[in-house]
Length: 246
Image 1 (cartoon, rainbow, N blue to C red):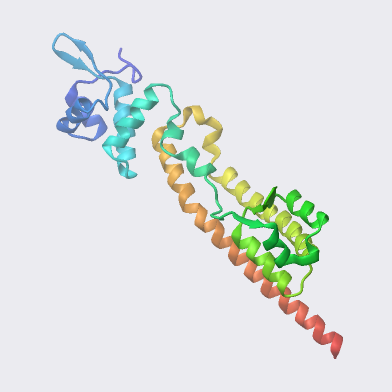
Image 2 (tube, helix red, strand yellow):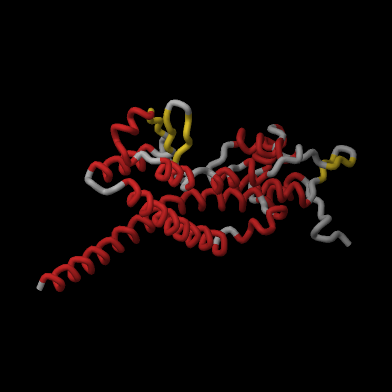
């Protein structure tokens, strides 16, 4: 008795099972998207792995992949490369979230910006927070925006040491917020990665698209939470000052 796992199909039967036409099936075969069939005389026999391949092609096409891209994916996958990596899942997860531009400042520029606050202690604190690297002709800061904000705050009369102390606290809180989001995504959406060896290309493609959609949502939530928190804190501080003066 023929089991489902070892069932074999003629061309017409395979096309029907995959929900495509025999013409499309032959086209895939010509493009080498489908593994060669088992031949018995003039009859070509296809198995479950061919049906699985056709379903995978259909899933990838629905998600916007071109036949050329699918052919490259399949070819690389058959050479032992990680399918999930090939369709961008790993890249989507590990791609940088920040779009910060590094900036280089000479010692003369730093002196003009910070004056006598450019101390060894403040420099060491900046290095420890991971923001700057010291070079012979000055420093390179990982973020032009943060560097500009720092110099602007100091220009407003806030000591550089106080700015750096606030920066350290903000970095710790930002790490905590990031942990909230990564835990949410890991626990609720990326559980399939625990069984990466069993991850189908179609499922990997779906997860890739989902990760791309979640990135801007996470940034939106973080920004909204911060501005709402500022509203609460500023209102509370204002009430405290009023009560003190009254």
